[in-house]
Amino acid sequence: MNKLKTSQPVGILNVDYFQNNFSLSTYYPKEHLQDYIEHYWLISWDIPKGQSHRQDVIPHPSTHLTFLKNNSHIQGICKQKYSHTLQGSGNIVGIKFKPAGFFPFAKKSGVELKNICDKSIDINTIFDIDIAKTEQHVLNLDEPMKKIDYIDQLFFSQLVMTDENIVRLNEIVAAIAANKEIMKVSDICSKFNINQRHLQRLFVKYIGVSVKWVINRYRMHEALMSVETNKNIDWAMLAIKLGYYDQAHFIKDFKNLIGKTPKNYHSTIDK
Image (tube, rainbow, N blue to C red; front, side, top):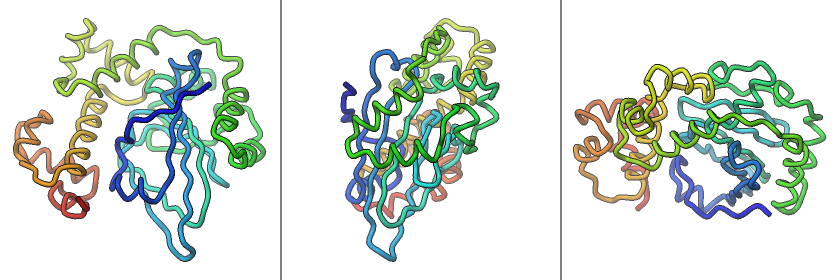
């Protein structure tokens, strides 16, 4: 039985609007898949006729396998903001892999993860399935557990791969996400007693991005959460808290990723 995940979504822009207009549920994987899958995510929506909504997301360092009507695909790690426009009614069923969790599947197919960053690729590049038939079946099932069980049986019933680096790298990324004191690559090397050059190679091979990029992405998630949830913000103190030497560099990074300065984005949020 897959347990329902109750934590708040992180990385969704204008999260209050999203939660008021969309149904999102996430489920933990079964025990034998916990080294590979972060969670399954299911979204449904019903937008009035003639209207549309563009949802922006600042993704995590994870590869996703997504079932969406006429657009099922594998999405590599997105280094920039990811946007998707929704209309009418429908649902999406997705798998969020752990940072290093997609590596064994990509390796088996000869795909280097660094080469699919910011790209959507055909599911058949990695998995030999009938995409149209699978998509229709998954999206039409009426219960979340039926959807997840079907996917598990189709994709992961023969999973027997073991790689200690997968577990270790997932632990490192989890530490970066949880520990706000981790600001530099050297902090990770000290904490996990690992050579910096070796760590960099492992991240590029097993995840597809650099250690520095992962640290910066999670600090941006912290920034986004602060901007979304706080009415009054001391911008200089927030920049220091996130590990920036000055406010200008924080503003530049935030604007490059979100498309607006922190202050301008803050002014668009209803609090």
